[in-house]
Every structure is written in C-alpha cells, then in structure tokens.
Amino acid sequence: MTMADRITLLRVILAPIFFALFLLPADCPVWAAVHPGWIVALLWVIFIVAEITDGLDGMVARRLNQTSDFGRLFDPFADTLAQLTFFLCFVVADILPAALFLVVVYREFGILFIRNLMLKKGITMGARMSGKVKTTAYIVACSTAMTYNSLYRLDIEVLAFLVPVFAVAAVVVFAVSVVISVLSFFDYLSVYRSTKEVSAPD
Image (cartoon, rainbow, N blue to C red; front, side, top):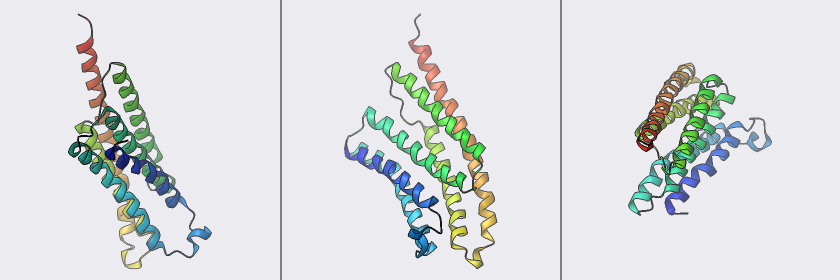
C-alpha cells in the first residue's frame, strides 16, 4: 500500500474504535473512574483525526504521485465505512432517526452497485463533486450530533439550555444531508447511464 492508502486505512481502523468507545456503558468498570470529559475528548479526537485523513490522503496521493485505481475505490470505501459507523452510533443513542439512516445505507449500497457496474465496463469511478458535497454534509451532521452528545454527557448546568437546541439541530442537519446524499446518488446514476450510451453499439 502507498503512503496515501495507509492514511486512508487509518479511517477504517478508527471507525470500530469510535463505535466501541461511544457505546460502552457508562457504568462499565472501564469508565467508572473516568471523568466524562475525558471520554468526550477522546471521541472528538478520534472523530477529527478520521475526518482529517479524508482530505489528507488525497493531498498525499497527488503530491507523491501515488494516485491509483485502488486508491480511488479505497478512499470512498473508507469514507462510507467511517460515516456509517458514526451515524449508527447516533442512531443507537436515539440522537438520529433510524429511518433516515436506512436511506443513507441504501444510498451507499446503491453507489457500490453502480461502481461495480462501471468496473465491468473497465471504468473506475472515483468520488465526484456531488459525493464530496455529500461527505461535507455528513461531516456537519456528525459534528452537530457529536456536540449534542458531548453536552449530554458532560451535563454542565449552565449549558443545559443548549442540549435541546442541538438535539433538534442534529436531526434537521441529518435530514438535509440525507436529501443531498440521494441527489448525489442520481448524479452517479446519470454518469453510469451516459457511459452506457457512449459504449452502446451503433
């Protein structure tokens, strides 16, 4: 694997670690003597590092001339794996609606299917601009949900009024990101249809 691919791999490794830490019961002996602030800080570090690697791997690949078909597929795969893991945590914690999460899952499997169809035509479909916009919307949604969860865990009295505000904001932003993701799916679908038309026999 190239240096860029190793940076991408870091997201794949961090995702299950985030999942385990996020859903570990508060009364678990591991957390019993740990202040909630440390847990919140650790979750934020994992989340931020995972998101930073999303842009860093592409920069490294271009600078070191390490772009490849494998990297073009591995990068969106790692993005999807990490984002679905974050969203699943928020769904389990009753922060985000399960129905919207299901739409995201269907969308990602749909994109995977389209990429496989493109590969059969000898074309490697990397991330498109609509996909990058979708990723940005996902990051905003996750950040909002993370902020709500952090306020809830810390239970700071002077900030208590922000908890319901971010609870609503998380759902609204997530809903918007789902709409963007669906629109992005149709963008990828249009690309597949256009290549099909071009390659069709006269």
